[in-house]
Length: 354
Ligand SMILES: NC(=O)c1ccc[n+]([C@@H]2O[C@H](COP(=O)([O-])OP(=O)(O)OC[C@H]3O[C@@H](n4cnc5c(N)ncnc54)[C@H](OP(=O)(O)O)[C@@H]3O)[C@@H](O)[C@H]2O)c1
Image (cartoon, rainbow, N blue to C red):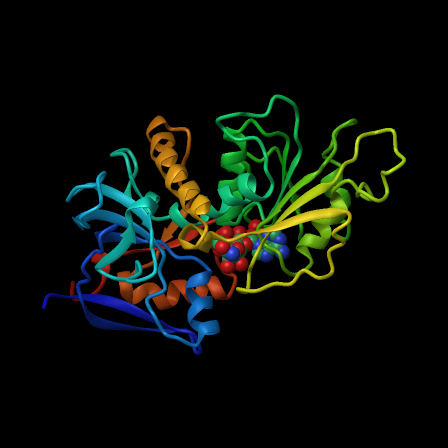
């Protein structure tokens, strides 16, 4: 049986073992991809830690199609693709498996390195904007000003949220970031508030609103360390259903999208009469809800088109040396908060011995 190199991530301590594994076979609706470049995400160190199950936790795949399952219509061997890994055989390997519907073509103008930054966090950003917040889409763009707060504007999810919101004509976009502020501005944020040493983050956010503008939408891509409390404070204060019953003005309710930074979150301290909130979960791309799976399918096809048209661009990245042998270093940097406004990626061919 032919074998491949695969990196197994251990949670505690955060280490990686490179093993020989059989090259997997795609199921009926899956594709087998020769991985050229793997991306990385905070989840890749969190999942092995919290599940106490060492595994190949990489999700972001960029490479070429090797084989397709019998129901796969749109991909052929040698096609250049990126993909969000499904439930088996992740991206920290020479070969990976993905469902066809979370696989998308990449134009020749886009490198594998760029493509590897896109799958997981761009879809998370899109779920937040359109599934949770219900904001205008690029297919029915905003016609009026809709102020949007992106808390965590230099995170990978946050910068993609900025890029997608711009495509939907949403403005002004007010970001919150630290040393990665330049990434948020390059992505298209109109203003960036620095959260560091800032005693009034909410006030700093509101200072960017002009008269008559109401901040009712916030996408908090951090959702820890006080972030959503600042976001809620910055949104129209006290305009919940109960307060506005007698008001002549229309009922306004702010909407907040949260993320699950630690794999679970209760958010019990949020006053639901004033803030309507939901949680963006990228795992819903592979969940029970067919609509979420179809959202992923359509979104990724649109990404191919936007990439081709130059309307959408990858997140900045750093290539970690050593290919699979660099996965431990790359994930430890993520865990230690050393990655700012960028994504650590791995070129599989850089793995010693390959
Ligand atoms: N539930 C899901 O489906 C899902 C999906 C994707 C991601 N996530 C989670 O979402 C979070 C973001 O993921 P990611 O991949 O986008 O992260 P990332 O790009 O690795 O995030 C790094 C960035 O976090 C920013 N940051 C850290 N603390 C901050 C704070 N208090 N306020 C504002 N910015 C802060 C840093 O900004 P500066 O350098 O500018 O300070 C840095 O640029 C992670 O916790 C991840 O696990 C969950």
